[in-house]
Amino acid sequence: MKVLITGGAGFIGSHLSEALVEAGHQVTVFDNLHPQTHAYSRFPAYLTSNVDFIFGDVRNRDLLKQAVEHADVVYHLAALTGVGQSMYQVADYVDVNVGGTATLLDILVHESNHVRRLILASSRAIYGEGAYECKSCGAVPVVVRDTSLLAAGKWDPPCPCCGAALHPQPTSEKWQPHPSSVYATTKLSQEYLALSVGRAYGIEVVVLRYFNVYGPRQSLSNPYTGILSIFLNQLKTGEIVEVYEDGLESRDFVHVSDVVQANLLALNCDRASGEVINIGSGKPVSVLKVAEILGGLAGRPQAFYVSGRYRVGDIRHCFADIQKAEKLLRYAPCKSLAEGILDFVNWASHETAANQTRLAEDELTARNLLRKGT
Image 1: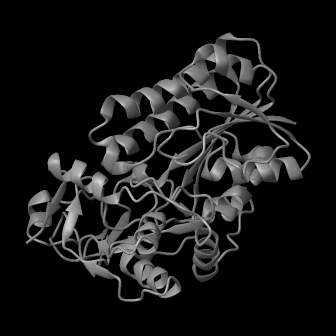
Image 2: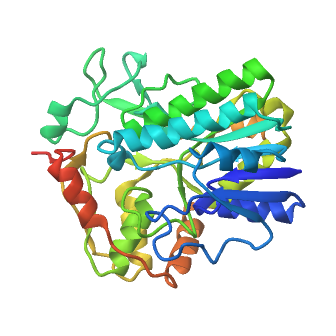
C-alpha cells in the first residue's frame, strides 16, 4: 500500500516508516523537522532513504494535499507534545494539533484522494488521572487532584466520596476522559474530530492512545517530553536529576518497538475500525524507580533527589488496561522495562544533546506552573 506518515521523521514515525518499508509498503514521510525535536540536524540521519520525504507543516493545506493525494492509508503522528509547555503556549498547541488535524480531515473530505484508513496517534494524557478504586466505595468517578493538597505535599488523591485512600487500577478505554492540560485537551479534540468525520464519510479511523513511549531516537534535547530522555540527558551532562513530588507517582512505560507493532497491526485489522485502543505495557512503574534504573546504568546511581516540587497539570497515577488491544489487534508487548531501558541507554551513549531542562523549569516557575509542596 501507499502509506503517508505525518510527523514521520520523528521518534515514533521514523521507526514506523522503517517497519512499513520492510513490510513492502511505499512510504511518504511528511514532517516540518521542528527544531525542538530535531536539535542538531535539519534532516535526521537515521531516517531510512527508502521513503519519499516532503518537508512541510500540517497546517499548510497545499503541501498536505499533495502528500495525501496518492495515499491509501494515513498515520497522523504530527503534533506538538509536552504537558508543561502546552500550558503557556496555548495557541500554538491548539493551532498545530487541532488545526493541523482539521486541515487533514478537510482535505480527506473535499479533495480527490483514495484514503481508506486513518490511524491517529493519541495519548494517555486524555484520561487525566487514571482509574482508582476505594475499598469502601468501589470504583470512583473522575479524580482531580486538589491544588491545596498538592501545596501541602499530599500527593495521592483521596476518595471523593468518603475521603479514604484510593488504589490505582488499570485504565481502560471506557474510563471517562478528563484532560488536565492543554496538550491533553488537543489530543482528545483530535480523537473526536477524526472519529466524527470518519463515521460521516466512511473513512476507517483507528485511534491508538499511546502511554509513555520511550526508546532510541527519542529527543534528548526536548525538555518537555519523555521522563526517561529528560533524566538521561541530565545524567549525561553531569547534573543531579530532580524527581518531582515524592517520586512515587507512576506511569506506564512502553518501548517504541511495541508501539510500532501496534501500528502495523492496526493497518489491516477490520475489527479496529472506529475504535479507540490503549497501547502500553499494562504495568505501572514509579518515576523514582525509573530514575534509580537509569542512574545505575549510567554509572551514577546516587545522582538524583526527590524535591517535593510539582507541575500544574501533572497526574499521579495512570497505567493501561491493554485487554482491548490484545483482543482486537492481537497486540502483545514484547520488550520488558529492563531490556528497553538498557536499549535506550546504549543508544544514547553515542548521542550528543543540549540540556534545556533548567530553561524549561525557569519558564514553568515564572508562570507559577512549577510549585513547591510543603
